[in-house]
Image 1: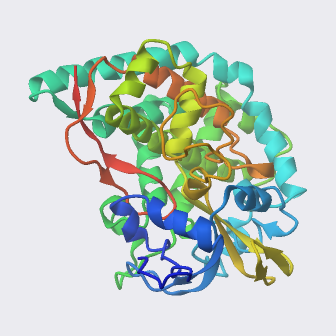
Image 2 (image 1 turned 60 degrees about the vertical axis):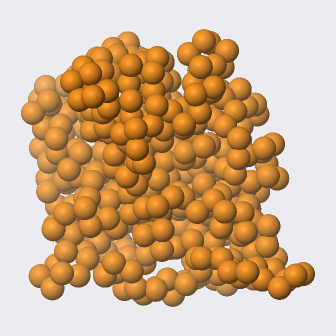
Length: 421
């Protein structure tokens, strides 16, 4: 935490690494200290929650510097050390690098073009009516639960988890009987820092944590992906897995990596953004009134709610050569971590960034990243969020503090108690 400084001196560098801090709140005050005084700041990586200490990293807090890092894969590599703050086991790194998220151009571009053929705008738009009806149905069910339970309901359990899961399962073409597996795998991979979310599977025999992205931990998901692809070859349908299963350019193992990426990233983008957006609306009744009255356009409102509550807090790059950023000398091999949530509140890029403004334009938030790795499913995520907010009931008020995920990676809510009516 930040301590007081003498007049004229810059305050100390606050710790924005410890994942336990994020269970209380995103440390926006400390992000501002970084932006104003330490825009590229060295962070320690002590042992936390059983994870071993690491060498440390550079935290990048200002919007312009974050964009610079994300747009320059030649200097800031996704492949050298992958994209999580914690260093993977060196033995796992070749496996992890097979994932598009952990590649640099030109390999990244080839795989991105391949999966883009399956993620066509036309296919996504055909889901719009289904997604809208699903949002309506889930909110209607939540209203019934609220009325039976004194007016309150947990929106994560009643609406947003199931909404994100079922939409993704439809897009991928996962049979209804198997859809619970997607949520199980997402919790295991995304919630690995949170003892309540990760479960016993991510601990070894001594109780030490195991990397949820290691080959051993992904074996069951990969086997399922192979079985599903074989099914889609025998019985094709209009879904993403059918397209991938019939793509002759995918090498061995690449389809399984795509399934992992789409299952985890595709699910958790909306699973994290949706309750965060609903919480922002519940806490700001005037903004919610403007949205419901049509005085704030749906598209701009979605962008502002994404800026306000980005689903991803951080992403890591590794310096491919010596460079300079924000007045600091970055050495080849150093870890460089961009702070999406800090960039989204940067006074240099946004007027009154601490105010929710559903009519904000322009809105250059980085909630879906930037550069070659900008979120491939952003269009589908926006469609889902637009439909969800449009179906929310007239009365939406906080009924208690939300329970936040223990994570310095995902801006997740584990529960969101609200009054509905």
